[in-house]
Length: 124
View (cartoon, rainbow, N blue to C red):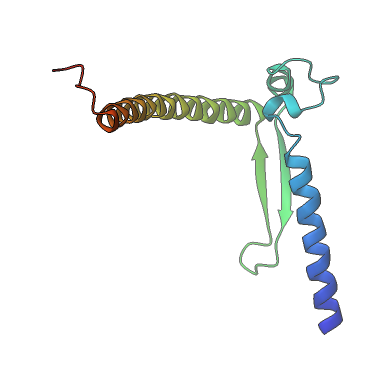
């Protein structure tokens, strides 16, 4: 058992390294195949054209031997774009905070430098 666990652990580490190295080259939606999806919205347009489908999933549960999952590409597309919009709004608010904090830091730094030099404050 010990050898198998080591092999699995080593394999997991190798997989993590492969994944992390690929993440360095991932650039959001532009990371998609640009031949198939030449613009950022091409994937979504393609998704909207796909028909809905159903999958029947078999279960080991005695009460529910199988169940059906409905896949509606237009609904998936709408939800993805909604999340994209929410994230964009959050980032915009976060960037406003970064700008405000940056201005405070610069102001504080300048005030400290003035005090260190013993120069009168501009407000005086």
